[in-house]
Length: 418
Ligand SMILES: Nc1nc2c(c(=O)[nH]1)N[C@H]1C(S)=C(S)[C@@H](COP(=O)(O)OP(=O)(O)OC[C@H]3O[C@@H](n4cnc5c(N)ncnc54)[C@H](O)[C@@H]3O)O[C@H]1N2
Ligand code: MOO
Image (cartoon, rainbow, N blue to C red; front, side, top):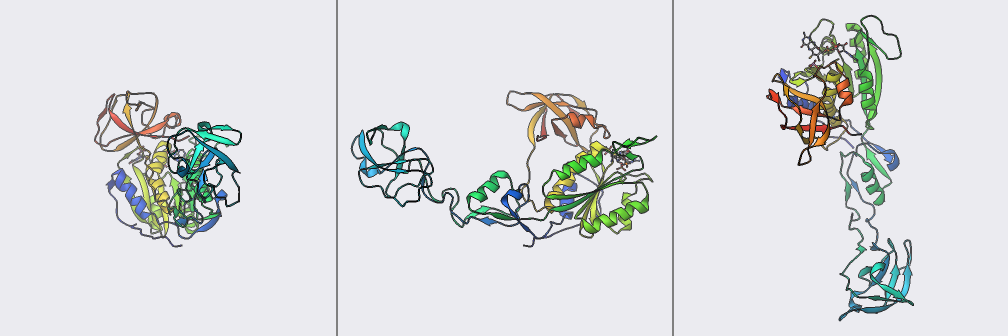
């Protein structure tokens, strides 16, 4: 299987809106090609590479939806009650091809095949059963409590489209259709590196001027939680142009995406852009009207997507989630657009500078009269602060033109999923 590829890296970038930056990042992301076959039990979270058709009808035969009695409506003429002898007993898994004789009923259980000629199942609660006879007073409807062959999925019908996350319900559907293995897209190979002389790993000592590396854990755990990612963690690179360039070049040769954090803003010690230019990268996104995270670099090194996230941890988290992740999803072959934004209402006042779309960590404990969460803003928006994001239940978005958020104002919120 070969995926359609259309990329448009290489356009120059002034300050872009978040939506424009996201679109450019997505356009620069070439979907991984090919597929591998996986047993259903190994495929959870992976991306379907091709449509799947059902090898069996679901359900495979007409069967009873209830424990009760199979009857023929033609026997229930005039006014009830009707009295019928019970001539057969049919349990789930019964392999006999049975017919229901005229003027009789069959004891039947949930999931058992409906005998030929029967056209309704009466729940056992609705009959009186004595001495091999049943009496019923209400006429059943035609087809009542019968699950028809193929009513869920017909044999040979599409059971799953390409480009979908293989969730447990989707895998269960394939199992129900008799499909044992599924073609999935190859994992997206993602390398991460943290840049900065000031970085030290937690567990090591902290020298003067050093801080602990948060972004490695942020990105590493986020990415390793995505079943369609194959992660390589390249650790920390010092602020040395030759070392950064070498690391980027090597990482790009063996990965579909390289993600760095730090070194993308304007200082002489910010070497990512120089390294990318020296490697003849095509750069699509350089500055985004987003808060936090304005200095963001996205481009391509050959077929490899490069994402240079800002070093400040809150900025790295937001730019990854809002701009890089949709591009990675495209690389993975995912065609569904997650729509996780929900309406909420501000429970705070916030006077702000206009111009950038802002992503604000929020929590809530109350809801308004129509059930929308009443948001409490956490922190002051400092892009190096991590506590507000760690305490947040979600992220609210404030439009670029808004100069003041007032209580009661409608905002969109993206709740974090547990
Ligand atoms: N003159 C200007 N200075 C800055 C600008 C600007 O436009 N002009 N933009 C500011 C903004 S906004 C941001 S965001 C940062 C982005 O900086 P860089 O991406 O170049 O990142 P660094 O300078 O390397 O680091 C910024 C900050 O984050 C800390 N950091 C870096 N990596 C990590 C990590 N892995 N874990 C934890 N913390 C990390 C680093 O120590 C710095 O404090 O630039 C502004 N400056
Ligand atoms: O874009 Mo930066 O993250 O605002 O400090």
